Image: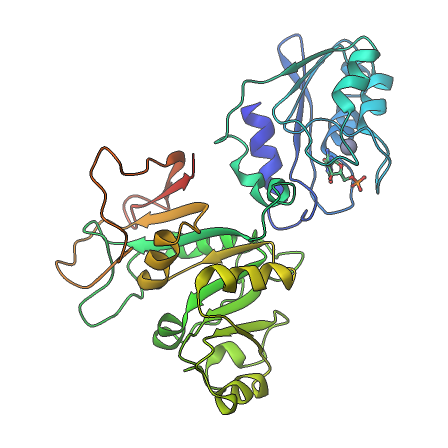
Length: 355
Ligand code: AOF
Ligand code: ZN
């Protein structure tokens, strides 16, 4: 199943609104077929694995990261393909929350196949948050915060310089990460200080380019900033407070961006959801990260820990309500990964999810 999850992740950035799915067929201890869902609307993981296994699928075990579908959508039902292939046993990591497609496990059982649900492991399928969030009955987008911090938890030095705390491998990784979100966001201070583009410039080209969002309560963004430069298909949305005057709003709209008016982060995120944004990767600054955390709006944290000390600077996550150790919320560790060559970079990314 671990291999099946690895394969699923190859669909990163390419399958939404459908899931990433991986499948591995094992016969007599040998892997005889592998598949993953590589592109929205394309072949399902199970079908690809079955095609690879051919006759060796007969009597074999299929490990699949999502319950096989029982419906005809863009693709025919995988449950029927599994039955036709003569697979004897199916191990499933996560039941399908999509009511249109669910029911595959029951159909397989009815055909005499042994079906097992793997023990629940939120970390193993954490990559599918976008697919799963669609069925989570939330009025908000899924919110992830990515921060690069020094060992002493600063996101910038005392002069406000934050480029680059982490190394080149981390930068490549961030571009990969961006491809998996519906929007990329920063606070206006960061947008101006780094003159950000918020585009995806990595090895995965997202099927739908993420919307670029700037939280600009005071309306300070102006048309000269690079995010408005028109070198990308990804639209730009600027969220301003109700105190920002019409002239400033017109200036931002004149630069080609959409303007959303909101005075708090919850309503701002709700407006993004209404505009069709399902998920947001917030990349700073620290103040925005701290405010989102304080308001309980963060679903996932990616903290890139760089092996250096700054002594002073801009702290990550300011403004969080103090808590006694016994009361402080404990997050779930989803993954820890070393980014790049330890001789060059030695950054570590820690992925955390809510419990
Ligand atoms: C996928 N890829 O590998 C699996 C999926 O319209 P369709 O036919 O592509 O069906 C989409 C639904 O099928 C999807 O929401 C999910 O519930 C189920 N399984 N989907 O795109 C796959 N196994
Ligand atoms: Zn299917």
